[in-house]
Length: 337
Image (cartoon, rainbow, N blue to C red):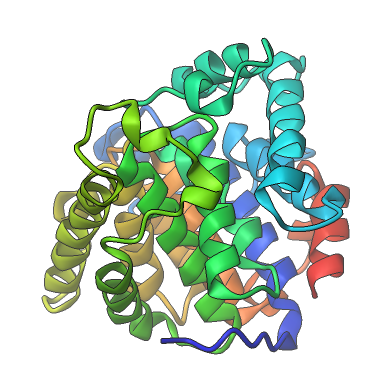
């Protein structure tokens, strides 16, 4: 198991946050296109250049910033301190005029309930494991915390909107991947680390962070509830390992690990792109954006992973001045670097 020790060469926190935004921006115009349509528009290599001044992102980056600022503002990293800040940031995002990027209906529905000040366990959409649970979790993985706190934070921020156990488990694994990469793990090592983590956590229900969430779906026990999420994550991680054991056919990575509309598939398909192109960060983003699935979320997470591994040196000079929310990304990145 990775030790909870952070080393921060090469501005890895900044590289991860900016990488998430870059992937999001490249995948934004391709999200609802077929691979054939994407290749017709951008060529077989997919989108590789930021477009627009600034290059616009989606709700993926907006909500990652919401999580990031909530963590930044928290007087302590406890559920009592963080939950109200996450709630306030999520609700503010939901009513912002900038929230016009085809946001997920689960997030909007849950935020409407959160705005009514009901308990978050009742506000959440209990049956949803959409990738909104983990597209925004990257900031949790950039904190210098112990693994129990990392897990609790990752699951809490997911649970406010997505109450399905697979959303919780996939969010923890996504944050853990960022954490491990920033601490020095290599991209090819990450799938095995995630499988090890999933098995070790399979029956761990974090009641301090989740309260009675497990009771809403009608599970017989907290352990039964959370094990379902870890088992679904382990299944898709097995598909990831199988895919990485085969030659790359250059096609849509979604065919191997899913289209990414749900949390565990977004994690696995983004990792597939990142590991396949660990030495070519922009290609990792372009590969994620050239899919038939949730291209912006896949490319965003691929960027978060590669950026955590390589740092800001992964990305072309000048992109940091052209991406939307550059000032916020830079501020949070500098704080955690």
